[in-house]
Image (tube, rainbow, N blue to C red; front, side, top):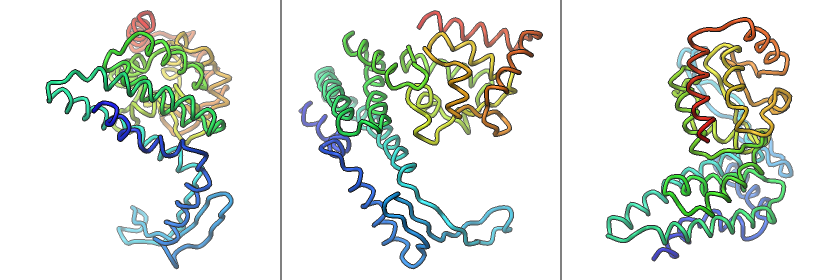
Length: 294
């Protein structure tokens, strides 16, 4: 029962990892768009995987009246989003399966261990089949880390998931997913993030994978000094969460929607040296406790 369940649950990732299906996936996506929008299609670049088509929109500038505008589909940007969506759906299916197994009076440990072993195999296969698409490996690792932490799997899986995380992370993450979740929750409570517009999974994806390969960014809900202090506090959990690396990633955005660059963070740190506040002290207190207990 357990092996069959894991096979069914992992079907999507098993399918795309049978061989390199990138061209097939791209061609299928373009064909479906052309069929769906027909005469509304304005431009197609088969090689790059881009389709422009006319769509209808309404916003505050059109007084609620629909207006026509060009919509661009870019497979290279949409495919990583699809992988992330499939990853979240996979975690939900795992939780449901575990719950169903437990309701039948069966211990789900065998199923989870089988699943963890298969995820490990898929991670290794992804390195071979899609060596340049590291986000596929990273998302599979995301699932492995999720079940390891949530269901307290054996130590060997914990060790592996932590080692692999640092390999995928653009910033050299040296911590567990559960620690990043705690950091996000604390930061949201302290109003560093607005969790109604910026979500936990995006925060984790940016820090534990390679944000330069996706459109995902960390969006702060505070001034630059508080953002810089937050980064400083969590730096011990990473090998390379440096200002220079953050600048290169272009994946940290301030409250005004501006991508934080090296100059912004250097200036914020200079101002931080001359000030203190209850807000800064609270951030230091809560985050240092998490960092020390990693």
